[in-house]
Length: 109
Image (tube, rainbow, N blue to C red; front, side):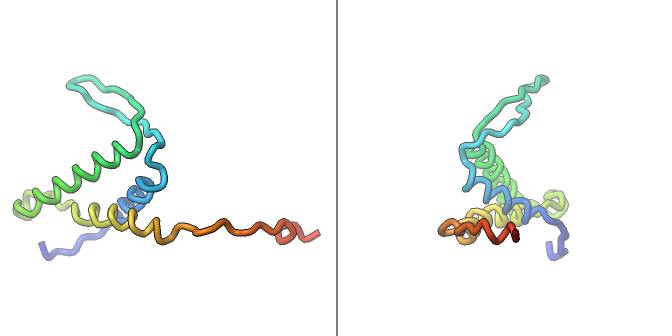
């Protein structure tokens, strides 16, 4: 569609992409529905965000073949682009070496 969309979902996806790189083994508490039951589990962020990215990619590819009315107005490619941008940019913005500390600059007396 040529209609512009407004939202911050691409930026939020970039934060998720950065989290994917910086904290891949941290555990995320999530709900997993199994038929009528809900299970609360802790899984590594790598698996959770990997599954999330693949679901966005699948829906984005499906939206390419669907009409405007079937895609639901979700900017799938903004999510995908934001996630990839977060992965790339977090490496560029990372500090190369720790900043030296000067205790006297914080305590004037």
